[in-house]
Image 1: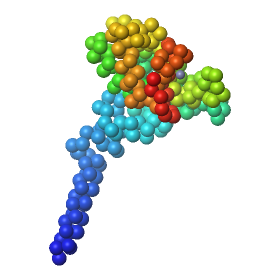
Image 2: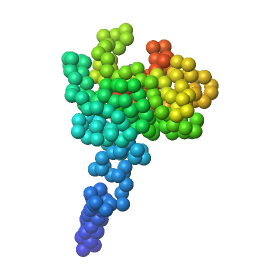
Image 3: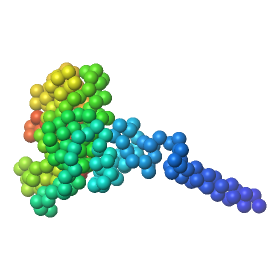
Image 4: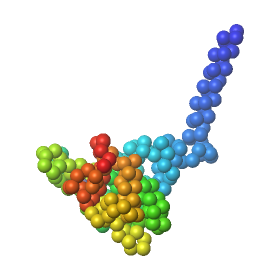
Length: 233
Ligand SMILES: [Zn+2]
């Protein structure tokens, strides 16, 4: 009899936890904030939680949902997919001139590359600019995303050939101050500190970051790549 009650109580507990969890996730009046709710779409401005990168991975390749999420503070056009060959193409293609309220020169890229960049700007670059300079970053200088080419000195295709990477060479603050990787990396002052911090923050969002610490080919830009895994230098 006692064994029966133990099993009965255990089953009730499981039902309460599963039922309570389901209630929290699906009930329209749930007290669970959206950024902790796996079925709620992500927003760029949501606080970052352990669910954020999982939500990004689900939405990034979705041609319908990715542009909807990107919209927050962005200016962009949705373009049809572009295909030169198996090696060179842009899926979920967008052309953007602003991401997360930061201007950039017109850049064609994949939606998930744009979205990842928006998240880095919002949660990595702007907090660093506020802490170090007390103001926002107004624009970034990109060196493009799509480029049908091999990695320098090898026969392997670059992630730029599928627009899964974007190169960023500098930042302009709201007061017009310019910060350039080529001039300011490692300068021992606030600009160098800012660049080191945004490089470190990029590694939370991109699969690979290559900058001046990696090699001389990256002395003047960060190569920020959403595919593959590994380096953050
Ligand atoms: Zn690059």
